[in-house]
Length: 128
Image 1 (cartoon, rainbow, N blue to C red):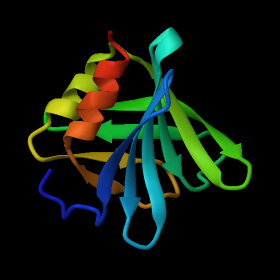
Image 2: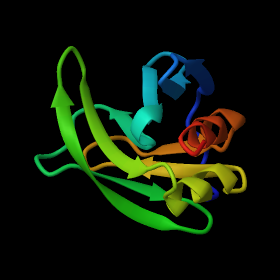
Image 3: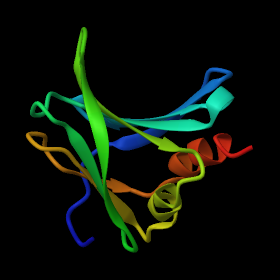
């Protein structure tokens, strides 16, 4: 958890039933998006890029580490997408991690992201 943070910043967007926290790099666009689909209280973790044939996303926080099954979606852009229930304790570990958490997928550059209010806000959106 002492790794250098990935350059960029968090943003938040509310689209009604969908809320989004997006981490955007200074030159590379959105590296990670966290989507809350309110109707079924599901969180999607969307990492930009193309991984191997059996993708998975690993989240590392100060208090928890877990690998989440994912799928590769190739459209205009390639994304690795994993899903969690809105009440999953791993989300609390991400939101409450002191300073940062890491997101990794095979074949993609690891992200070391700051724990900011946008992450907590999207998680809370999927709990109410």
